[in-house]
Image (cartoon, rainbow, N blue to C red):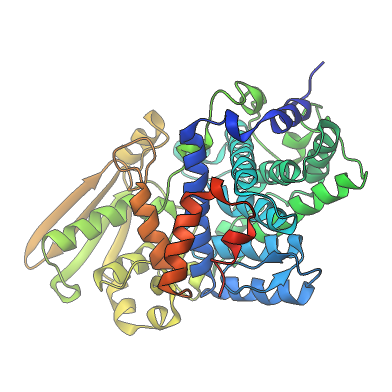
Length: 462
């Protein structure tokens, strides 16, 4: 009788670079490019700075690099810091798979001098398995659509630990038995589904719905334990008291984890963010930015802004912005920085921006509304983000409407390679020289040519 862990282990062991479709390889490289750029820019966040400081203090053998700053620590501590850095600005792709899955494979790959091809394969496996668990366990959006609230207890990305662990196992060339035990260990080490409590908390904490760094660190630990013979429960996904139950999932569709493994790829449907904030707001930002640009509206021209979209429950106090994380979940603040033409990226969350009295004053002009049409659109197409924004300025009413946000993978709004290259360059310019940035882009987009991942790491640090 097969088990989910057994099927996943077989998938990990048997997948080779030469077996991967070109579009799958390309998506893995795009994900690495975007994630590493987000991490470099994340060094400017308080969340990122703290993570780097703690990772340095934990130290360990100097085997893996902290992105951006360049200090070398143990592979698990590098994974911790890099996970927090990628997620620091909330600029990473959605679902939030990369900040959980990229750092563990990257850290281990550097520590064992793996090749670029090895890293690509690990990235593909990690993100595909993570996405499949997300689909099998998902319940948050359905609850929000039907009841305008999230479940009383739910996780947001915690389950990606299994993809992250699988990626590490692939780099370390584990056999099926070791992989099954590593996944069983990871299940018991997975963090609690704390997202509902995080949503209610004001101000927003740096933990931000999932402890990204902790899960990265833990996935590495799970694999290293299994390597030494530490055992987990290889049947943890199959029993009636298994992971889905103690994780508190309202829905569990195990067939979605294993069906058509290696034939159907789900992670390639990832959407890349053009704005450093919660994805709930992106369609609304698309509308607002389009309106002010087309009509040359300056902040003083605007009398009020009304935004209509999907119910947003993750921040009960959007007008009360005290932290960088508050910024990421406050639509009034985001409209204010957009109205003042502050450069998109880490500048949106710079403390000089947060403390700017003009930004604070503009926020008072913004009101948020739930649009029943957005809810109905979401029921019909879960990937939609229907939004309508109305701006009153210069004695006129300006209106814009969008069904999908920029970056949505299955539409003509999908981020192009050039979009992601430009985003990487903008993010990396906060720390790196132009010469290093250009070489890093080339290395990432031709990663299969790298004989040692260290070739890449040397280009993405100071």
